[in-house]
Length: 84
Length: 84
Length: 150
Length: 150
Image (tube, rainbow over all chains, first blue to last red; front, side, top):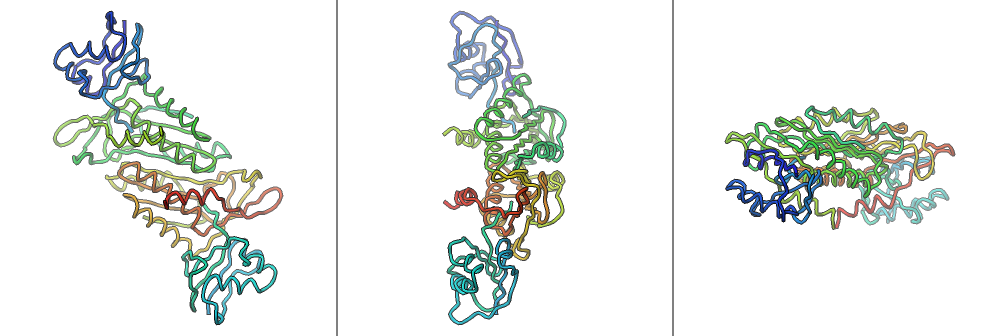
């Protein structure tokens, strides 16, 4: 199981802020997880098809597409940050 | 006539903070004025013989050795500044 | 060295005095305040909401502060960032750096702001006369950050 | 845009608030405070006296502020510099810059400090356990200034 969190524009578009999911066989990186999420429907595809910049964090640290995902991780997806 | 002011270490070494002086013939620049002052004695020579960095201002604006001095000017001599 | 994320406003004068009076080796204190403008990308802004990722935000800011501490000789530093509803003229963020000499304080303060702008998980949603909109990240912020990585 | 030379202390919080609340286009305020350290060039400093050239000082600071205004997009700026007797932890100088975006405020504030340090007619005399001494100008300040002239 992993926990997946969505923030800001993603949370609004997906109407979804958090979920628990089984990590399917073959899904071992952020990039692979994005491909999986993109198959969930149009709103998901729009966000995760790679045309938009979506940032990811694992266990509260920014990561990139190649970073491995493993059971027990808290994965977060969000748009580029705009604080300050 | 010009007014000459001395600040900080110069004022202390010369025991002199301000004076009015006639601008002698041939003294037309800051450099020439420094040479003239250096002839006044040892304390003056130490300061104005060119070995120490002495800054000058004319009428409240920083100037360099080549800047002309003319009657009516307020000339100031001081060490490199150390405010802030 | 502290970071705080809070809904409430902060008192810059009090923070500055507490920091600068704490240490006789401090010769320079640089502060940055970011505040809400009434205009962004050509549209009037009447209010904004600042969302964040609570369990990540403080860790991210602490990481930025730790990086600054490694690069410069810092006596003390503070980051305070607000979340929630804000209006024009409201303070958003405070970054404070104290050091023996000014060069370190200026560099560390600007570095922390450049990294906060591109790495800390905050998102602004603006209210404008034509509706709500999420603020878009700026290329200029990525460029500002990349200066420090050369 | 103001410069002040004064014996009295200044209230940074009040100055900051007055400036930042004056203009809805301000998004960034950078401040620099310089204060007296208890150590300089390896010797304890118990007090210092700041001498200046009264009729030149304000003109010099106004010139520095005008140069910064030409180079960067500044909404407002302030320089306050103290003179007279100061002790460790006393504030010496305040430079405040407000702008729409942070880059201009950081650059203009640091620029003004670098020029103030090398052009404004102030001289510090320190009291130490081994007697009084005039503070020597530092090469690092000339180098800091020369960065802006390339």
